Length: 310
Image (cartoon, rainbow, N blue to C red; front, top):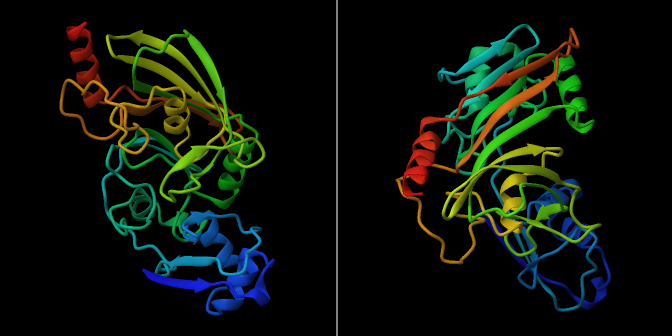
């Protein structure tokens, strides 16, 4: 990681942050600078700022420049739990612990590399490093994902996501007893202003729209099992929204907060979050396809212990 530390001089005061940085770091294009800002890798006086921030005389600016990612992805013959496949789409059941596509610290062993080995025709569909990946799940979340095998299928599925016609339902176990039987969280989500690895609920007009619907399935002494449906697909959306209600997902070390909470009754891997249902219109036939994935053993075991404790 290359870290550069710069100081704004009086002659540049009032310039946009992205333009000022692109002029001071010529090896980076303005688009690349904007991407680094969006990713939280640029700090002004220790705080993340927007690209439109107007720099002031004497401000100290720090920029982290990660090494460029390889332009291509090497296929890896990793076994996939295939739920459905035809010439246009592939539906898989992702296990907990598997990263969907390469990123910082996860260059190999990804779902994307496994898909590329299984279906070489996906190369270049949606991008060289994310072959066919239409939507993703966090590393520590398990469940259903759809992969586009052709460019036409990719365009259709991404359009369905934008139109909010793709159904994605999750099962989650969260901390605390959720009081309402059902509810809707309609709060914008964006990059956390002080921590680039986290997302956060932001004031309206600053984050991207995010809507999550939930319904209580079962309450326990200190936990609740909920059914969750996404209307939008922001990064960490369920985790951020449930934490904003004071009910973070069990096993979540990022959004679990510092409040002392009852520990889980059994050793647990990953997040207590599973993508259990997925439905969309087939890109070619337009027939509605619906898929389900049973709760993984880790969550079944946790629920059993919670019931026994009750």
